Length: 125
Length: 246
Length: 232
Image (tube, rainbow over all chains, first blue to last red; front, side, top):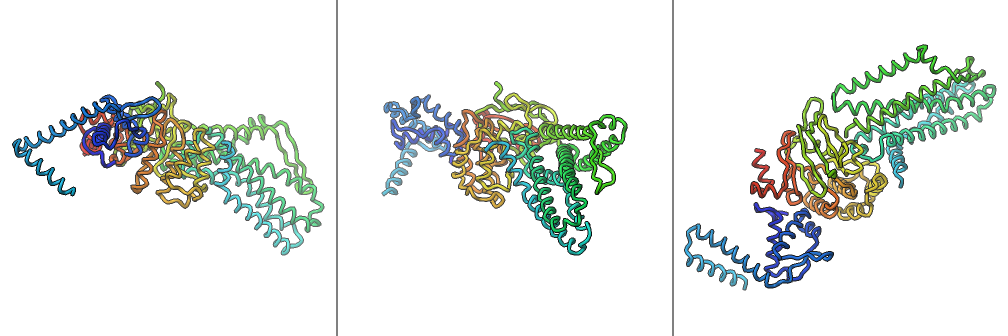
């Protein structure tokens, strides 16, 4: 419950979360999602809210519902690649926007990012 | 289980402790009678405790019904949200009281019967009348007790309605209404109109060995009482269904 | 469209005190609705009026088109804050009794919820702790397949573990295709992800009724933040 906190409608937050799980590969193409009720139980969330999140993702072509079988991650990989790029673009856009607002130059951002990623890699080893 | 029987059993459980205490008290009465028979061995005095115990039984059903309603009052939403109509809920309580008073009185009569056997010579001349009086008293005690229990119910329901509307004055109001209607009823019974309406179907019960005057009853009086009781019962059920809040 | 609980200009007075003032709203089937507000705002009274256990001083309350009274209990499964039980029963007996009284009481479902709530069927109700009584209340209320389930502070005063299993119980056993769940809560954060909409009361008046998502869209606020802003 406590994970849903930002000032964005809860159904959109759940949709974002599922979306990210697909991008990261945690949820594979063609994989079946938990039923609306099970998803609700998992996150202590109103089934109507889960339904809205699923519908939203279906509208975007990320999920598809097969009659009588449940909701699945879309098989259309090209779509996923596109979504993956889109999400990357969005996140970088936000990041750069904030950095520029604080007055960092392109070179500073680039080198900072490089250094940060290198540190993470080292930390992993 | 079926709806009403389950309700009846629940209501039995609500007052069973008092019921069993009553039975134990009956045993004590019998022991007291036995003791008095030893001490004052030549008189009918020994049967006084039993007579008193029998008379006290008029308060039996109203007490049971009141205790039962009082315990429902501790969790009123539970009782009120029951889907059965109020008359069935209330009938279950009266039926329980009726069952218990019949058992209690029968038990008392049986005990006194056992005690009479060794002392039979004492009452031999009165014997026929004694058991006839017993037979006369038994249904009358029960009938009066049932009537009083309906009064207890209507008073309880009235109190429940009023307490949310007028608060602490509700007790006073309920006592007032009770005295007024009780007095009114008693007053009405002295009028000519009452006698006109009820004095039919007369039967005189004669117990020459015990009572010098016969007891005169009228079918009309029973009908009158019955109608009053049914009216009050309908009023109570209506109050519970429409006015009592939980 | 008559499958709703509808309040029209409802005012409720006790003796001289006005508890609710001119409340109007309707709740259809298929929702989880929270009644929120501070202490003494009239939440419990509002819930009791919907159940037909309380009667309005003026205005009208209808459930599926019929004026609410105690017989509304047939279509409304109501649980009071402190819990209402016959102390003479064991857990199992209480379940059996409810099953005998309500045609819509599903005994198999009650058994399931009882297990989820980790209640011992042979425990005497008299001997149950507050937390266990809260759980039993959930069992008895949710096992009814009634169109309307009304719960007064179902989560208050219980430890987090019990609260979580109760919330899971609500999601698992309330079927939003045919049922509506309405509950009161003074801890809005507790029920925020659970509710579709809310009815906010303040001093007996209706402050606002809205969908949680609608509030987000119109004011960009979560209900907890909105309440902080509105109530101070």
